[in-house]
Structures are given as structure tokens and as C-alpha cells.
Image (cartoon, rainbow, N blue to C red; front, side, top):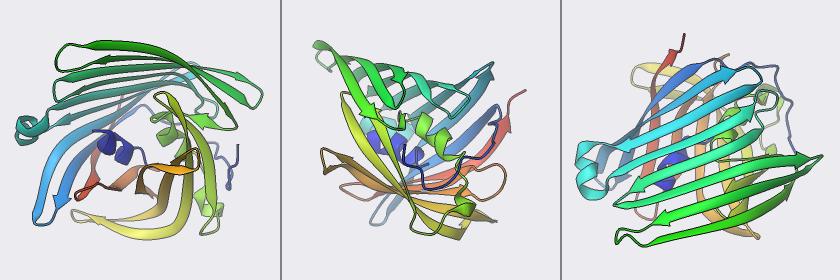
Length: 254
């Protein structure tokens, strides 16, 4: 399931400028397809929700496998991030995953002192046989630091129109018990067709490293080049096949 929500999240050293962009309360819906050879089936659905509350955003990603995939490997995952509205800086990050009979819970609390960022992370793991393990870790980074959900919203505030093709954004990501480096490359504007609609979209490529070595599979995302800046297509490469996520609709919350 890591590949599914990483794929959805394709979205300090910033090559472009931040937009004065206020994110709306919304629910974004996605269909997630698995492709391998002649196999091309919907494997899961996901909803990205955002609500605002004073100086904070509250984001949630809920993903679940469809019935046929439940019989192979049942997944019910939830990611939550509380962010400052200014800059989409994460304050608290929570991840709960139910995957194939196991349950994992991660919680990270962020503190900042200038460019220095600390993450106080606690982890809970329960295996299928009931065995439980718990651990606590303190993570450190210098520069723009996000979690696996807030990065999605942070990238929606970047003014890609003023960036040259090939420009890069470099971020730190607190992921579980480690700090990953995320490099986002802007690959220009492309036309993307979903169903019968054609979108003009910014193409972004993602690369994750840890201690100088690749730590996650490479991914790409396409963000609509209109005022909504919605990720409309996301693609990740697996050991066997690819996973694709397609935007299926939005609902603005009242």
C-alpha cells in the first residue's frame, strides 16, 4: 500500500516562488489502477479531504482496496496531517495502516527553530500473529521539511508557471523512523486526457533518497495548470507492473 499513497502524493531550496494561494475545503476522489502485462484493473479508491480551522489546515487521505483486491490483500489506510495555513508546514502527522492482517500506527510531532526541524516520532506495529512492537525516534533535518501528506498541499502552492523546465525543488520528508530527501523536477506542461476531458497539466517527477541511496520507487504526477491545481494523474513503478491514480471528481465542502 505504500506505493498507492506515495503515488497519490505526487505532488529550504525552492526553485520557484510561492503563490498567495488559499486552499479550499474540498474532497478529491481518485481511482487507483494496477497494470501488469494484460492485467489492467482498478485496485483501490482514495479520497483526499481538506478542512480549514483558523490558522490550520486539516488534511486526510483515506484509501481502500476494492472487493476483488480485498480477497488478495485487504487494505484500509488513513493518513492525517495538521498544517499551518502559512506555508503548509506540518505540525502533527498520523498514519494508520491495516494491510493484510497487520496494523501499523505512526505519529510524528514537529517543532521548528529557524531552519532546524525536529520530529518526535512514535511507532506501533502489530503483526498477523498478534506480536506487538513499539518504538520512539527523534528525527532532525535542516530546511523545508514535510510529511507524506502535507507535501501534496505544499506543491499545490508552487508557481510552476514561472519555473524553467528542469528546475528542481528539494525537500526533507519525515517518513517513519528515517529522513528521506525528496527531489521534485518540473518537466513542463503537457496535455493529459482522462475519460473525455483534456487537461493542461504541470508534469512533475519525484525521486526519494536516504543517505544518498534511492529509498523509494520513482514517481510522476500531473497537476492541473488552472487555478484549482488538482493532481489529475499519478504514476508509480512497482517491482511487477505499475500503479496509476486518476482524478475522478471533486466536491467542495460547505
